[in-house]
Each structure stands twice: as C-alpha cells, then as structure tokens.
Image 1: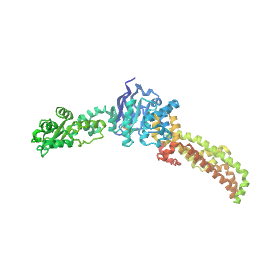
Image 2: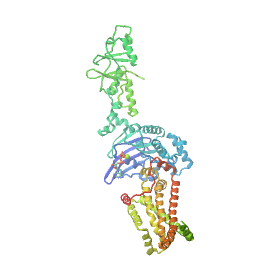
Image 3: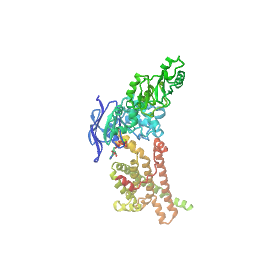
Image 4: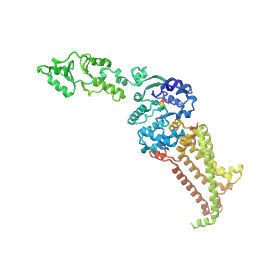
Length: 389
Length: 237
Ligand SMILES: Nc1ncnc2c1ncn2[C@@H]1O[C@H](COP(=O)(O)OP(=O)(O)OP(=O)(O)O)[C@@H](O)[C@H]1O
Ligand SMILES: [Mg+2]
C-alpha cells in the first residue's frame, strides 16, 4: 500500500482571478488524523472539497492513494470517501437506518448486509439500534444526529474520511463527547481523516498533524507538539494563543507551576512545626521573617533529627542551603534543581522575598493539564508543599 | 328550492353528460399540465438562466383572460375538445411549474451537498432527495391548478367542447337562475372534491420523517407558494 492516502501537489484554486487556495502541497499518511485550521475564509473547506472533487482545482495535482483524482469517476471516488459536514445533512424523510445504509444501498449491496451494517454502526457510535433505527432525524438531538452523520460516513467502510467542522454547531458538552468518541473510534479503526476546524483546542486534541492556513496558503504543517515548540511566526503564535504556550510544559517557567507555601516563623518550636506539617499535610515548611523574606526550610528530616531537644527553635535546625529559583526560571532548570534538592523548591523574587514553592505535584498537574487540552488554565493555588496524592 | 329541483329534473339527462365532459376536460388538462410542468420545473432548476424567461412566458399565458385564450384557439385549431384541452392545459401550467421550480430550489443546500459528497448521481439526488423533499410544494401547485382548471372549464362551452358550461349558458340564455345553478353548483362541488382528494393524497404521501421535522419546526409549512415572478426572475439571473 502507498504511504500517503492523500497528497496535494502544488494545488491552486481561483474563482475568476480571485485566488482562494494558492499552490499548496502536503501529504497525509495512511491512518493519520490531520486537521486543517485557520481564520474564516482562508480556504479550508475549498481544500477539503477538492479531495472528493466537489471542487475542481484550477491547477496542480491531487492524489488519493497515489492515483490522480482526475482519472477517477467522481461518483465512485466519493463513495469510497466518507464525508461529514457541519450542517450534518441527514435526510429528514429517511429513517436513521435508511440514512446510514444509503451508500451501501447505492453500491447495490445486499439488503440484509446493509441493514446489519447499520445496526453495527449504531452500536459503534453508542446509539441503541433497537431504539433508534426506525426513528427520523427530526426525532434526535443535534449531538445524536451528528453521531449518525459519522456513522453514515463510515457505512461503506471508506479508508478516508473528510470532516468539515463536524462538531462546531453542537453545544460544548456534546462537542467534547463527540471528540472523545472520534478519538476512541480512530484508536480502533485507524482511518485517514482530514478534519477542518477553527477551534485550536479541538485541533490540538484530535490531530496527529495540524495544517495551519492563512489566505489560501499553508503557514505551518506540523504535529501539535512541534507547533507549540517551534511556532513559525507571529501569526502562528497569535493563532495558537499565548496562553497555550505558557501552559505547555516545555516553555513554562517556575512562576507557572508554583503554589502557595506553608510558612513558619523562625522563633517557633519544633513541636509547633510538626503540628503545622500535620495539619497542612506537607512535609516541609518555608521559614520566613515578618516581611516574608526567605530564611530557610524545615523539613521532616531536620525536625525528627532534633525533636528530643526541647530548647531548639525552627531557626536552629532549618536548612539554609537548599537550592532556590526565581519566578522566571525555565522549567527544565527547575526540575534539575529539584532533583538535587528535596522535591520542593522555594521561589524567590530579587529581594529574596518568598513567592511560593514548586513541588512535584504542581509540575505533574501542569503536564496533565497541557495534555488534557488546556481546559484547566488558571494556575492553581490550592496546592501546598509536597502535597502529593 | 322547488324551482331548483324542477330545473334539476328537467336537465337531469344533460347534467350527467355535461359533468362527464367537464371531468374529462379538466382531468386531461391537469394531467397533461402535470406531465409538462414537473419535468419543465425540474429542467429549470438545472438551467436556472432559463427560469426567468420561461416563468415569465408561463405567467403571461395566465394573465390572458381565459375566455380570450379559448377564443385564440379557434383560428388555430378550430372548435371542439382538442383546442379546449390545449387551452386549459396552458392555463394550468403556471402554478405547477412555479411550485416545482421553487420547491426544488428551496431544498436545503446542505442536503444536496451531503448527497453529492456521498456519491449520489444527479438522477439519484432528484428522485431520492429533491422530489421527496419538494413533494408538498409541488402538490400544492397541482391543487391550485386543479381548482382553477375546473372553474375555467365552464367556459369550454364557447368553443363547443361541452361541459357544465353548457347548462350554465342555457340558464343565462333563458334568464333562468335555477338552471344556471344546476350547472354552477356541481362545478363548485367538483372543485372542492378535487381539492380535498389531493389534500388527502398529499397527507398520504408525506413521509413520517417530514411530518416529524415539520412539527419540530425545522421545515416551513408546505402552503401554496406565492413567489412573485419578479423574485424568480432575480433568482434565475
Ligand atoms: N463558489 C465560490 N465563488 C467565489 N468565491 C468563493 C466560492 N466559494 C468560496 N469562495 C471564497 O473562497 C474563500 C475560501 O472559502 P472557504 O469556504 O474555503 O473558506 P473556509 O476556510 O472554509 O472558511 P470558514 O472557516 O468560514 O468555513 C472565501 O473567501 C470565499 O468567499
Ligand atoms: Mg469552511
């Protein structure tokens, strides 16, 4: 089998002398999910529709499984490619089952076979066949209708599926659940999917590769990870959004991951320190003076080593040599410092005032949020020192 | 009332013949009109440049007073059933052509797009999507045509094609209102009966899915579409 399911070679499209897509080239490997994203009117839909010949390119070559689409019969080509649109486009006068079975029926498949296929697909997309097969589209919610839209695109078992903003008309909850559903399906089916969206969260969540377009041209085509690491220019930075870069673990700084510190004053006794650690469920306390200046750290180690001596105060036992970082220390250096230290790091400003602490838990939380798609955006301040688990 | 019963019994024999002729004229005209209009309407949706001019011509035919239209037939085709049927057919075209054209034109673009994208041929899209979706509006056009044709057919008597117009004219000549009514009432009843029959046919043909969609407000009610020709001309251009 060829390596690429879809390949654009210097493809352009103009209406009159108005260019809409300009000399774009890219290839989609078999089994990949690629999102086309960009501002409204940048040519995403036009690009997509050239694949199944709903729109003919003005110049250039478009290959599907290595074959020039111009040599394919458009009707046959389209039947071998799934197509899902934003408006869903289910036929209101046909039942759900008839809608799903339409392409197999056009392909003159055996009736029993395509009805069984419809049932299978309803199961696959999580709609009970017994309840839904004989209903009409008007009797379904928007989210359910679009599930059926996806099932219909899968009916003839095409290996390429084109999706044009399929979830953008849905409410956020249905959208989220359909995205999860698509990822789940894609995990088992491994279709080649070209997916148009203008929602960067959606693109980041779903895509193996993102193609970012502007004015009919490709600005950058890369994996979500590479786009975050190496945005090509200002436009990409703007479009991806500054927040996502900040959230991304590799570009984060200590200030992004720090949480509030539990502090103690140097004149306190060790019993008090133990009590405070127990109550706040932390294994280290930041020692600060009345003006929040950092003096040192007392951890469980120091306290238990010296607990027998009732005279000693926090000031006597605290560790003054722990590495410290400033708010803008990049995360890799923070992690290195943490490894040589204790699993928590004080964050100080230029006047050695304590701003907070970085802990293993707060770093992990950031990484998780980044990969979950950045829904939890604000820096959490509930965490305290080494509050793991 | 007595006078009416008397007129009825006097004209009884003629009434059956006249009613038969009337039905025949109207049915043939509407069926012929249908056979011409629906394909013509479909053709216009495929060649929208022609839609404006063709619909204008068809509307102009309808603005000719019906009596004059029948009169025009005489020098061309003489008198009798054939010219009457032709005149009535011409007269029946407009509502059906217009409704077929707008009905198909108004099918949601996204349905056509997804149908094309799924690999349906033009013909399949017409039969499996456009006609079923436009059905209500097309039948509304047929109903309008049927009712008008049954009315206009009362004038067929002037070119010797018979029908209920014969009895009405006899009443007028005799200045006898009951006789006029013996011709006019069946004509009116006939129009109503046809209208109701076609309405039932429409209901019966409406797929359940469309009734569901109409109820949930996703689809405009199928009324009689009255799009001004000017409007259609603009769209066609
Ligand atoms: N049939 C057409 N004739 C002329 N111009 C067109 C036609 N179809 C699209 N365009 C223009 O081509 C450009 C790209 O359109 P396209 O639909 O591909 O944009 P898009 O990226 O999908 O935008 P959106 O996010 O709004 O869907 C737009 O400026 C649009 O106005
Ligand atoms: Mg678009």
